[in-house]
Length: 276
Image 1 (spheres, rainbow, N blue to C red):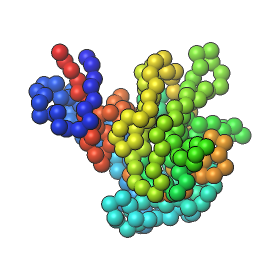
Image 2: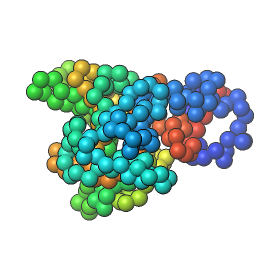
Image 3: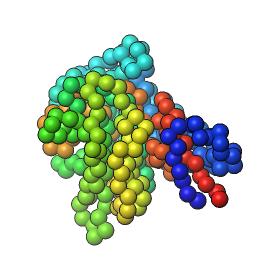
Image 4: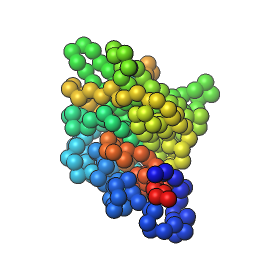
């Protein structure tokens, strides 16, 4: 079978129902998206509590740090998004990040897909979503989606996944950086996916803007002592993300692919399985 992506639903009416399938036969793309979310934080309850509900139904609640504020979201709802105002690298700080400290439930051994709606400050840089771990005095990361400021001051999207080397030893980072910058002070959806042995991709507002294919190594996931957080710094950066983060999700399902109409706010893409 081959998979083709269509940038909108315009071509769908020309295709027979027999070839329009979601990742799991018999399910709509929307149903598959719901099933495949490991966690989704919409921030609609930001003002009500420091505890943020998981809209995926998996009860992976997050905690908003005391220095993370609530602000107007992308559709104009007051206090419906998280605002990061402290220029600290963070790295899982319970004060400057939004954290989920029981990430044992979010194992990413086969696939990773992450997505967040963001409105960065005038200087887009810093981490958006990270999974990291601590074992004694040793720290490491599993994946990180963030913004890297280049020489011109533009914020390019960078997606890093730490992988298991064939010869064993320490995890090796697989890094993909976009050639297109994220606009400052504007809403954008930033997404990325990693499938071992297949592809590593970055999307901006539903459009594929960076891709690597070929023999990609297995994900070096760590469960014990792990956590997921929003905000903070990227790599060796000492400055954390400044700006707003809204609807965010992570997926580790068998269909962890942004191209399967997974962006919940815009069905820009459908995955078509060609049975011919």
